[in-house]
Image (cartoon, rainbow, N blue to C red; front, side, top):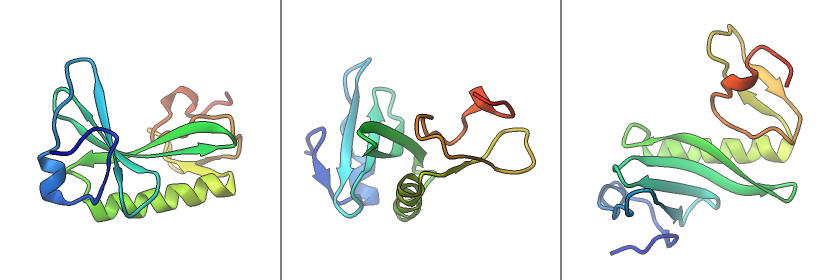
Length: 123
């Protein structure tokens, strides 16, 4: 069995068999191939791919998608793209209800896939 916070090679069978944490807790597991790619498991069985890394000294989590809706290979590709966006200081984030993508270069904004709190307005 795999222990929480362990580095593992993500495979479909392994991710499907990950242990569930106690109610109110989450377990994280790190991918052996792409540094910073993790999967977080909740007590109700939801498994979410995230990129976790430090950016300008602060921890940042970028939610990529859920397993099994997102494949492992797609999660790895998206994590690599997100790492590039963090390194460049620019994030392109789709905005619900908007026709185009808003771009932010403020490094203090928490990077998320759907930041509805600032959609269409300056923070």
